[in-house]
Image (cartoon, rainbow, N blue to C red):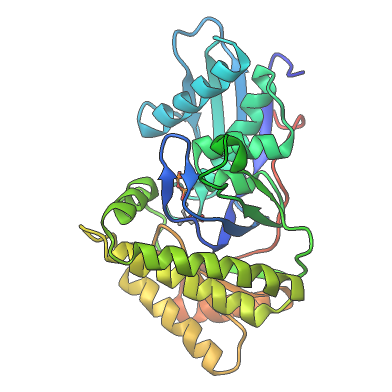
Amino acid sequence: MPGSDGSFAVAHPNIALVKYWGKRDEDLVLPCADSLSMTLDVFPTTTQVRLADCLAHDVVIVDGAVDRGETARRVTGFLDLVRERAGRTERAMVVTRNTVPVGAGLASSASAFAALALAAASTYGLSVEPVELSRLARHGSGSAARSVFGGFVIWHAGGPDHPDPDLASYAEPLVNARLDLALVAVLLDTGPKPVSSREAMRRTVKTSPLFPGWLAAARGDLTAMREALTRGDIATVGEIAERNALGMHQTMESAVPPVHYRTPASYRVLEEVRRMRACGAQAWATMDAGPNVKVLCAGDNAERVARELRQLSGCVAVVARSGPGATLDRAVR
Ligand code: DP6
């Protein structure tokens, strides 16, 4: 039971090796295809949800400042769903702290909604069983479904013919994956992105002539990625992840109007990664809804890859490894 301080939860971002890009149902946040990720051990989000009977509306405090904009609107929308399911009406005070720059394509919404889902479910008395929690977190932000779990995680799109599509779309750990994979995040620009990933995804589905091809390729990538992770085959994992990410960007760049997250600085890092590979290094790039490039490599090679990228790009490069799933944290005050 939550105490008078409510519940505190901690969750980490995840990086998709096979991306989620396209919804088949915007209201239920149902993706067009399965996706697969690794939860990271850096940039956690900590969220406290406390019932506040005296309030007429929810209060959302992000990194020390009251939010009255889009973030507060999404948090309240999410809490409305939690309250509806719990049969409760109390408003809440939500205090959240990110350690990752918000809006920079570093999956901050994944850790944010995974932590919020866990803290809110615990405070309002809903189940905190992880698979159920992943379904709930999905409603806040699709990629948050995966941050409920640690390590390698698959998010099932669920068949469109399933009698209850909400039930059919959930995340779970990929139990037989065995690979010491690390990621070097090259932070080029941590400002807010020009177009939200939600809007960019919507526009891509509606207007990109490449979207059907992207979906077919992503489905193939998922099967091949699962096999490569089971074999512990880092070269195949890296190749699939890089081509999947570049395919996602090409697809959104062909939307009308196009969505461009890649900047000249991103292209320079992508080129460096190709050059490092040509010199024999095992390093592959991936990108999300922002200009920053993340470089996948073997765990025992990560510090060397990070050093080289810092020298070449002059940028901050952070090493991340496989991290834990979302947890209730009673120690945080
Ligand atoms: C590029 O989960 O942020 O990071 O469901 O609309 O909130 P919404 O989108 P979001 O999209 C993440 C997209 C991505 C790829 C991925 O993480 O799979």
